Length: 124
Image (cartoon, rainbow, N blue to C red; front, top):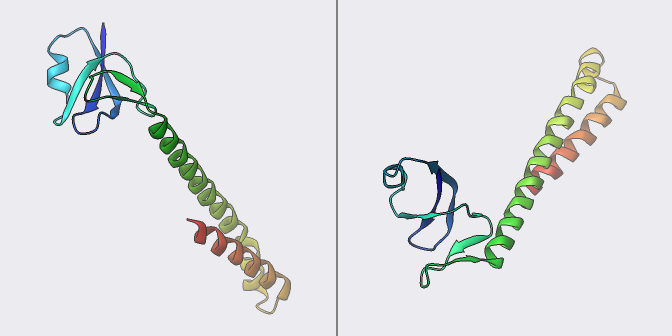
């Protein structure tokens, strides 16, 4: 069983997917256009192929960029989840306002929830 990682001919960055197979032809068939295969299992988030030397190198800039990107994605996802929670909280004040359109307390809670949602959407 052999494992190949695929790296870009343009910048040496690895794809996140790999190929593991005993079939010698599998590598050629599964290598995407613009990429090359290299035997081994490499980290696409922190390693790349140095195109001049052909060696796999650790890339601190790539690792940092990926950490920043993943942190942003986590924050984005967290904001979306919080918006979803707040939207569910709107149901009770909306029902209370449907029964009594003059319910100032329900209107205040609804306004507060809307403000929180607007603030979160501004961060997206």
